[in-house]
Image (cartoon, rainbow, N blue to C red; front, side, top):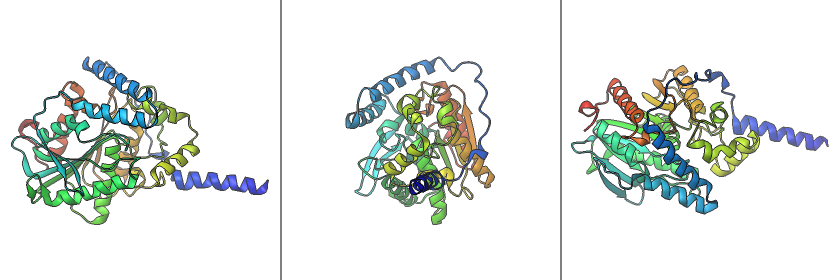
Length: 357
């Protein structure tokens, strides 16, 4: 019995001290007040589309569910007219596509890292965002097609992001090219990869991005932020897909995350919140006050600011997770891009005249 009790104590201690890591609740802010007013009428159409997405995820199991979600995400760009042209890149080491607006500056480049909970999404699924950023910034946008789980290790996707930045420093859409202004952006899981990439770039002594943007980033896969549960019912995208995780005991969830990622949940490579956050370039984070990842964003910004990094948070009431994807139909998405233009200008990064090519 004594050995059993000792084993249980060791198990719990290992789970909490190593897998979960430091208690970061001191960076929590009070819950935002109940939102005033109403979202735009167009927001209802967004919710209807999300209902289709949730139904697809819930009507399949196993590999069939994975395939259905991937196909549905890629179909988001079907039938949409974009202002940019898309050029596929596949040199054996790097896959993705250039997103090029008319009149773009090839010496101004932006690396975009897409969402999809590390198991879905592609450059095609995020053309609404990359097209909008390309026209807003006048930059050559490279949308990375990084390796996904479960076919690959989580660390493979991380390495793809690092290799993409090295490559982008010296290559433009026409081949080798000097970089005048560099940016990194991503959403949700891609936001996590974006923030993790910034720390790695700093540690490697590489040329840092002039600015970075993260939409609704996951910053802590220990999932310890209060909004992971308090916003479960108000998150119309992540709630239906991942709500069952909230019922799993914390310790078991930590072990499952460790098993799936093959990296401790508290490791900064997968939880950038828990790394060193000093010495970062200007970063803008946008998040919804009603989404599950709200406190991932708020904790990251609070901790980065305490470390002296110029990191800014903007929040919107009512919005769904990564509402910027629903440009140009959603007025709140266009508000977000207008704020991005102002942020880039304040960071010394040129934008297209009027914020749109």
